[in-house]
Length: 123
Image (cartoon, rainbow, N blue to C red):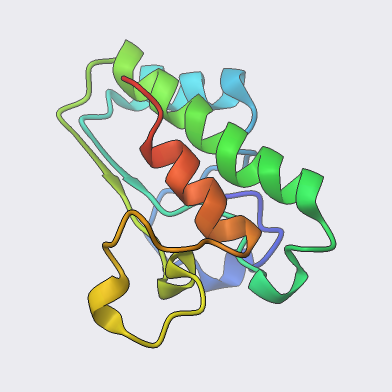
């Protein structure tokens, strides 16, 4: 985590914390090498949906490029499992929950569009 949206005081005592940027390939690689990672739970994202229209470049680099950096290292280090999570915001402004998994749904904001781009990245 780069702590851009949080505080070190929120990390429970005894939990290993490494401060870094998801877009930093060298940092990400160092984590895989140092810790022999087998499972990745990808939770990193710039999560200010209301601001995403105003910081598109920052949002794109963090959410899309950062995710690809993490995927690259996961593939390189042959991890066992990669879990890519999201908030409900990735589904856009829909009220019908049955449409959440509809690939034809319209994505009107940056976060759902970026999430869909990462999900469609070939291995």
